[in-house]
Image (cartoon, rainbow over all chains, first blue to last red; front, side, top):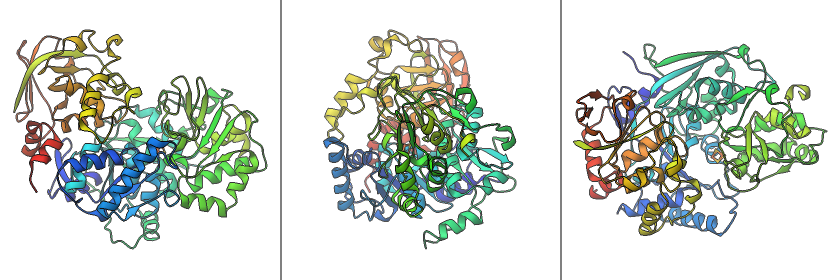
Length: 421
Length: 177
Ligand code: SF4
């Protein structure tokens, strides 16, 4: 009996011939990422372990992104402690403010993540990196400290759920609508201790930007990771970003899947909006159309990429956003920012009356640059709408595609983007 | 390795906010272990008494060595490690639940507090029952009723050594290399 893509990666990296679901294995880590929210904590834990040096400074990437530029003295202190550790350990892959962006975006676009590898990060959305056919997952600070020491991590081998999607995905539907639709079927615990592997003609047709939405939000169904088997498009993408050698790993034809769930894009009748407080609460936009909003945010590791900004700009071009709505656009990385400048998108946003921020997580979590006050309502291109996720516990977040967010920005209420596309 | 103790029965969807309220999360100092321990002890479970999925006398009556048996979705919520630390601090020795969220599962094992998911297990226990968990044999026994339950997790022996050492950090501190 064969193994799935994830099982093969975990077998390779644990030195075992075969691994099976629910088995605990110890794997070698190819890439370990931490950021400013937990990096200083991880460094402090590492220093307790009684070794002077990390296992391999080349395999660690440090990207301050949550509280940058620092919002207060406390976050500045955390970043300073982290940078001290980076210097002491000779970690070269450090992205200072102005050089990187949101960690998950930077890992992929700078070619740090390679097919067939094991990637861990102190952040639950590390699953994003599975877009390149890597096993990528989030871990805690204690375990990251141990990874820094040993380069090894224990993992419970997840069984794989195959999410097969067929059909054309065309405007006004985008990757986000598809993923919110999938999540509404899976529920918050639908993929516990499972790997979500996305396959099918729709996924093949999608850009790498779009595919990242799927792997990014795999965690919202409780999955250990999300993954997509590399194809030529992916290999070209990586080759354009790094010279590092890699080997594409694919699942065996006779692999056993926990389940295969079929989706057809035809079944998605309209853009999807996830109603608070769960990302799995997806409904058709017409069901919530007209809900008044106070803020519209386009950004984050889910939907802050060039493709997202292009769609938003298409809708906002030559128009003005609602006079009382705070509209915030934050490119996910410096590279995305530069692309948006070159294409004139930033001008469109500014002329429409949106505030454009520097690459950072910003309002995605209750960090800075757009925290919601009591009872405020936001429509956001991010991945989580839990109670108090972006501000006061009484505030509310609706999750949607950048198109739906941009359309809503124009009217000050949740709006079907079809009339503007 | 066998763990035995007295059972506290929890309901479903016990989330990390109940175990460790998010409003304490910025407290504590990542550079000082003693400060951190004190903070975990004081802040953990502080808001829990009113919830319907946790026995109201848990906070006052829990004793070192007790075991939690819970319904589904134990540990759902954020990735905060403090949620698992706070139960360990109160003396909870292990958790068995119908289902457990992954980050909680990892955090708890890494603290040396086994967290085992076993669908249907909550039906087999009441508060006050005595439980025995045999990690090597993958067996959970209700000593009060005599009923046995098998779980799926397959563990290498170093993993059990880690639990015996008190968790991942103590295990690695003790490993000289
Ligand atoms: S953008 Fe949001 S979800 Fe993504 S890493 Fe930052 S805080 Fe987390």
